[in-house]
Amino acid sequence: MNHQNKISNKKQGYQKFLLYIPHELKNRQHVRQLVESKKDYLRPGHYRIQSATKKILYIKDTHTLDFIEKNTSHLLNPSHTRAETFLSKGVGIIQSLINFKKITIKHHLADPVTAKNKLLMITKNDDLKLFNFEEGIITNFLTNTNKYLTLKEAYMIFHKYFDTPFIQFNDEDQSYIEHKINFKPYTSWTDRERNQAVENIFNKYTRYFYECNKKNLNQVYTEELLERLYATINPNPLTDVFNQIIAEESFNDSWPLLKCHGDMNFFNILLSNNKYYLIDWEQSEDCVFFYDLFSFVLVEALFREDYSYINHYLTGQYDSYFINIFNIFNRTFHTTNRKYYLAVFLSEYVSKRFKRRNLEKYLRLIQRIFE
Image 1 (cartoon, rainbow, N blue to C red):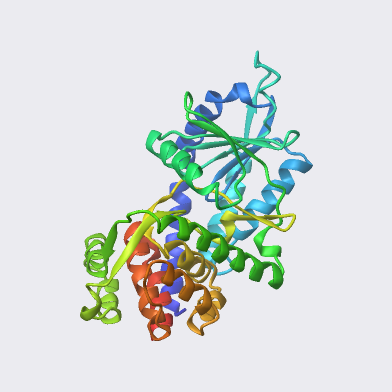
Image 2: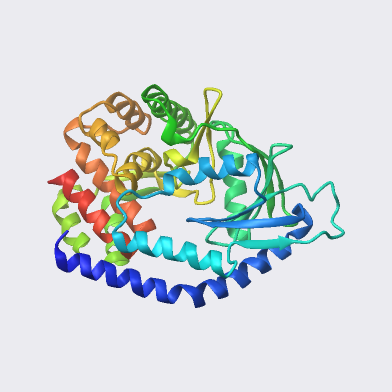
């Protein structure tokens, strides 16, 4: 990184730091309202607050600390700039000084049967997860009705083919209960466990695909995927890249659409007692049939800078799986077209999940793969 970029990053860090306090004051009030709405489910006590991609409130004990360690270790980014590190440390100091990091749930008239949860997780969409460690149960409350119905539909489809922790749904308050899985964090998996996870993913999806192919599936053309992509990101440097990657003679290639997980990555797979549980189905939607299979490959490279899975794919280590899967849908997997299939996936993935702040990551990824 050159000197000018370092100065720019440092300046951005200072600006974020100065804007933090008024933002956090407003955010804290919002968090308190969310907590208050579910206080009957929470054990009284002092709740500490930890913020990552998801805000976590918890009563400090061995159960909650172990959970936080397992669920936030992968969020630490070794590529943070000095400015980002400064911002993080400065925010921590400010939070401590003005007690941003604690919320108290006072003793109230809650039913002791339900008030057993001592950790609450708030997602970006204000969905809530309440953790009862003694009974090994997680209660989830969803704010969006369509999201709740999507999740319920996904469970009804996928629980026949995949290991999931779901127990039951409650339409009245848009909640569902699931088993809390005592899992081994992905960052601690051995190479053997990672290889077994990949094999498990392909085998489970192959079984699912056989059932899907018995139905009359809708199709999407490569050209349609590109049109959606350009509508999402145009004008954008990515537009030129995809124009170079996907040849016009491929525009009429068609791809079966079917219900997919939508956010397949290793951190949505929990390893416990040699079983791999698939979680977080909220983004399930209709996608090209190989969407989930390429998703776990891409996410590792895009956000963890681990290109091993992409390299395995590009060097043919997954060919036998893809040949079989393409055959299920009466298509031929051409080993010379590995990059083309990945580009088709990327056109759909980027159009669904593009965030401008990740533009440079996408460009680096695409340039590295297709150079």
